[in-house]
Image 1: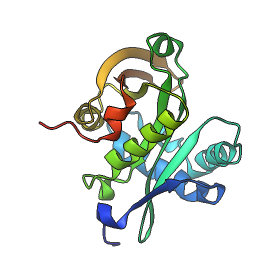
Image 2: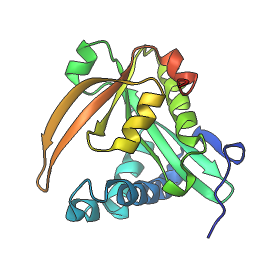
Image 3: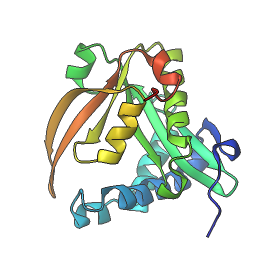
Image 4: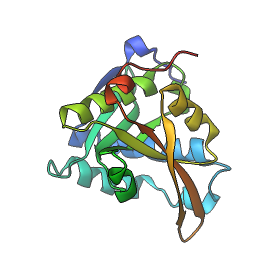
Length: 190
C-alpha cells in the first residue's frame, strides 16, 4: 500500500491533457468510494474509466471549453482533482453565483489532510482571476461528509434540485459562496 501524502508533499497545479487518464481513474474510484449506498450500484458501475477518460480528454483538450481543471499531485501520483468555470444553472446565476465548481474529488486515502480545501482555494482563485465574484456547487443531499466539508469552508445552502435519471432520482443541494476571497482563505473556524 502506498503511503498517504501529507499536504506538504502535495502540489496543486493546473491539469494538462496528459493527466486525463489519472483524472478518469480518480473520478471512477472516488465515485465508488463516495456513492456506495447513496446511488444504485448499477449507476456507479456505469461510471467507467473509459467514459470518464473520453470526457476528461475532451475537456482538457479544448482550451475554449471554459473549464479549468486543477490536480493534487503527491509523490506517488495524482490523489485528487477539481474543476470550475462559469455557472451552468440559470437560477443560481440569476441569484449572483456567476461561477461554479463543477467537480471536486479526493481519494478517500488522501482525505482529511487539507488537500480538498487547498483544491477549493485554487479553484476559487482561478474563478476570481476569471472575473467571477461568487460560486456554487451541487452535492447529493444525502452526502453528509461532503456537506460538512462545504459548510466548514463557509458554504451555505442556496438551492435544491431533483434530477431524474434512467437509474435513479437524484436530490441535490447547492452550496454557495458569495465571496470567493473568503473561500480562498480556507475552513471557517469552529
